[in-house]
Amino acid sequence: MENSSTLTGIHVPLVTPFTADGSVAYQALEALAHQVLDEGADGLVALGTTGEPATLDEAERRAVIDVIARVCGERAVPLSIGAGTNDTRTSAAALHALKRWPEATAALVSVPYFTRPSEEGVLAHFEALAAESHLPLVVYNVPYRSGQSLSAHTLRRLAVLPQVVGVKHAVGAIDAETIDLLADLPDGFAVLAGDDIYLSGLLALGGAGGILASAHCATARYAELATAWQDGDLARARRLGGALSTMARVLFAEPSPGVLKGVLHAQGRIPTPAVRLPMLPASPQAVEAAMLVLGTLADQ
Ligand SMILES: O=C(O)C1=N[C@H](C(=O)O)C[C@H](O)C1
Image (tube, rainbow, N blue to C red; front, side):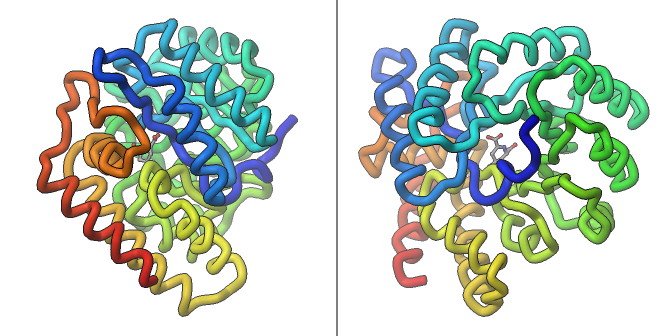
């Protein structure tokens, strides 16, 4: 079985680019995947939040994974795939369906959203999935989307499930539970930043890396940041961490991935900045602000 060693460094949850007629731009997706790996990303994520999976139909979701899995296979890098719902049985079936992609090294599974089970219920959900899944599981802990907070104690109990190898931690802060968790991490359990703004702080506390939409841009700088914290180059890590946090802030100034797609389009990397409803394209001002900040990273 894979372990958390594939879950270090910078993982890019790829956007799903669209063509002018609204269909998925698979060639642009493949090119993006290669670009971020060329720039130093350690792994890719298919169908993260950034990939707008809720707006893709089943055939599109499969085709998107096909493209990203092919690139990960060719480049021999880790592939995590977003899967799961707020229902345990359908989540188990979704995980089973991932057998189609032998390149996958982990499944990214959200804490059940909307229905707000107890923390014991969340634990029971992941126990059931861990018993069924052929893939290592990364718990996607995102209370501002799921409506469900988890304590450090519950996260540690999840971490001892043999199939659970990490958490994508996106709690909107570096809060007391995060500090508690990282102060005493179970062996082989990776904490990955899922809030781009807090990446540097999380790495400083012992996080293993991040799953970061922002890392489509300035990917090499993100890789450099992870290395700087690892090597104890504190001055470099602090300065670069601050600059990348500012960039993440402007990329998330409007609902993601609108601004990011606007930037990627302005850079000529995707054919349109389109997102699918209910998302709306970013305002020109937000894209312009992000491009300006991105320009300053060259001096860092
Ligand atoms: O693609 C993802 O999954 C990501 N999720 C976070 C979110 O929930 O917004 C942000 C992260 O940059 C990528």
